[in-house]
Structures are given as structure tokens and as C-alpha cells.
Length: 303
Image (tube, rainbow, N blue to C red; front, side, top):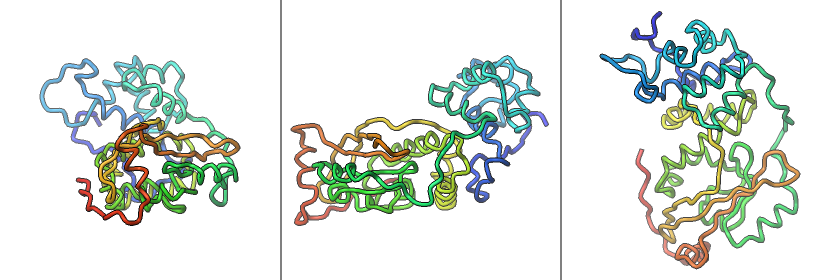
């Protein structure tokens, strides 16, 4: 069927239909190519448009033409009949789909190669005792998170910043399913977009990881916003960045978020929120854990 007909393509937001298939029977490379070409406009690709287009983004034939490959070969890639394109083909597709370095790295991880070796754990990885001592000694909100943003340990200031930053919690689940956590973040939509892109980067091609399957199935079943973001296949690693809060006790504050790898562990990270020295936010942070502060009612996030 010609790509310009009113054809509904298979959805990347598999959570609408149910849990994902095992990685061995899925087509992650094709899903990624389809999702990313739908985000590139003809104008961005330098293609003149005439009349009404019935598909978002670029057509398959247009991607193939711009990448210098046959339309039939590109169709085989999207449909999973060829899962091992050459490096030259991947470079051409990355150029057409306007992929940055992180998206290119993710694209390369999806070709027919074995996932990177991982140690399958029956439970959460235990942080080293020294990391736990450091966590408790910090005068800033801090916690230890796992690969999929599960909270492994936290100090009292972190729990004062958000009660949901307690061991056993999960930041993604709270961002998408807990109104109180959404109200804490004035930039909730931007923050949630970053976390979803971080999740894509964290999982790579390890698509049979049980924790990944469990978490994404739950979020897809209960959050339309998550399904929308997940279907975009954005990939981004976490970097230190300022985060705005609207705290029910101390009001608006902006804290710098830093993630530090914990030596001797595979995936654990120490996350620290800190204010600029001498700022009003630093003053607020000093009183964050005070029990006698009155509680405000923050404005709930839209959407």
C-alpha cells in the first residue's frame, strides 16, 4: 500500500493495547525509525509540500530517497525483515532523521546484536555502606536511585522536599500518577519529558529486563501523557540542571540537581539537590525540615 493512503500504522505506544512483546519477537529498530521519521517535517527535510498529507512527518519513500537507499530496503528495515543495516546506512538514516549523538548511539544499539551483558538481580542492588554514610552526612536533600529511578535510600531532607522520595518509591511512577508530585513541579511537563527520555537511554536494547517491562506497562496503562511521550522515542542522558519546585511549606525554590555514580555498583547513582550559595533558596533549604512551618497549598500541574 502506498504510504500516502489513509493507512494507520502500528502504534509505538504499545501501552494502549497491552504489555510489550518479548524483545526477541519485537522490532525495536523498526519502531524507532518509524517514530523518529514521524517527527521530521517535510520543511525540515527540504521537501516541497503540495496538498494535504495524510501521514505525520516524512513518508517511508522520502526517508529512503534522502538517505540514498531503496524504498524496498527501508521498508524491510521498518518491518523487521532486515535488522542488521551497515554503519553507512545508519549514518545516512541518522542524518535524514536529524538525530543527535545520543539518538545515534541509541539507534546503533538497536541493530541485530546481543544486548550488553548484565547481571540479573533478584532484588534491589544494595548501596555500599560508605555511600549510605555519605548520604546521611549531607546537609542537602539527597537520595540513591537505581537504573529505573527507584528510590533505594534517602536522607531526611530529601523526604522533606518530597515525601515520595522515600525508599521503595519510584520517581517516574510518582511524576505521572501522583497529583501531589505533579503539583510540586511547576515545570512538570518538561521534567516528565526528561525522565522518559532518560529511561529510553537507560534501557538501551535490554528490552527484556523485568523491571523495565513492569514499570513501562504500568505507566502506559494509567497515563496517556506517558504513552504520548514514550511513542516519541526521545533519548537523553541526565545532566546536572536547575529544577524548580513549589513546596507546600517553603514556597517556590530552585535547586541544582546533580547525579554522581556510586563506585562498586552497576547502576546506582547518588542524586543531590543543592542551592546556590547565599541565595534565598539556600535560606529556604535550611528550614525545609522544620516541623513548625505552616503548609501552603501548591498549584496543581496542568494536564
